[in-house]
Image (cartoon, helix red, strand yellow):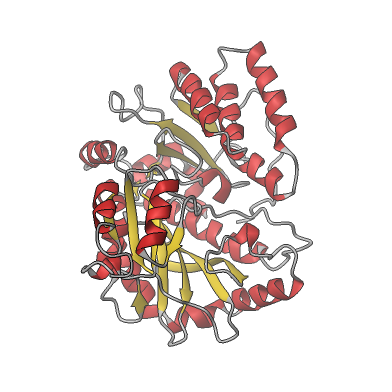
Length: 421
């Protein structure tokens, strides 16, 4: 099917999701003016939950987390079910997306992946008191979008019970989402042939501080604490407070700077290529099939696509384009490992960030279903990205259609057009 590259902007009173703001940010637009206008609209319509949630997304996009949570709370006090209409109407499919309150990294941003599709998204923000919407809106399938975290675990446990025998297809079962916790994922994937995922340990500030009572140059007597190591807070996303620690002294300085109480630590793996540069890719697994999202090249071990110089360096983009064009060979080379990763994670849709080591192993940094996948990069700079991302969109849509097709009576009643595709 044909996904349009851009959705026409809905009326300002609609809930917009993350996609239009992410698109504007990627294009280099200043979101502060839009945030100011959104604040004025909220002031004129204080009972409009859609406007409050739009403002919240803008605040998070601008890095104003306190304001983001405050405005999100205002929206959810008014209502918890929001809708993003498909560009094509009538929609072929209505997908109920279960989400948790939080910032833009708390849930799968399906509106970015499915921008321009024929799928209506019904976004419901769950709570302990109301894990499912009531009344239940008509829907063809359910997608559990909230990511794993300590605060989400009771919600996921409740969803596992509520959705165990749901009459519609459920994608990304709650029980499998537990597998994305960093320590659990490293245990699940560590012994797959061709896969290297450093053993990850969840550890408290108190236990880290205890290690500092040892001599500064004497590594702790646990494998996970051998220096250099990677450390991040338990709730860290997008590299926030992620650091490489070379010694006990450096660990002490890190704990003085970062106030979190729970952390993940893992051995640092030097994954430089032969030319001394670091290369990191993002791969999406849709019903077990691997698709390339992007590949970034940097001279620093901590790679984020937006600061790896991909926008400024035509040579890096040419290398990425070649890698994406030849991804079928990469997928064939790692087919056994990729299949095992998908099977062990148990998720219908999941992504991972990783690299290929010099000896040909898949090095996995993190794996979950909340990573951003989108088709918003500027065509003038990234003309090679449109087709690979469209392949992911089509595969995701087909996965949903196939799942719904297992319920022919509901399909015929609610979405007959799917039968002809």
